[in-house]
Length: 90
Image (cartoon, rainbow, N blue to C red; front, side, top):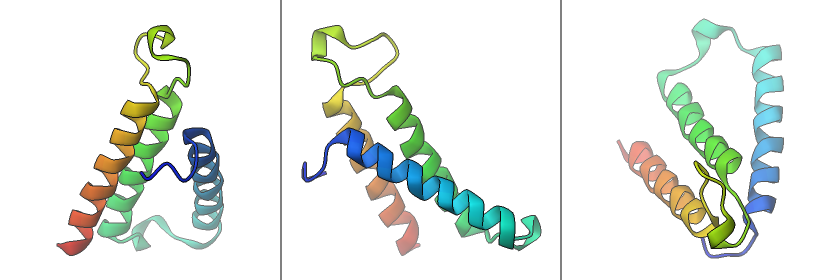
């Protein structure tokens, strides 16, 4: 949110973490053992992943239809972060 890394770096890190999480869950967790809050956390990660998929890093006038630019991407990340914080406080 503070522009410490680029959106592409963020998306690469997120993808690595999602792959690791999927690998771990496939090897260690039974579906019935997943807690409701863990499932909700996965929803937040999915939202971020989708934002990465539709992020177009082209200059504003050249962004593809149905995609979001860098500014909108950062807003999506920020919104997801705040929703996640609120969820953790519940």
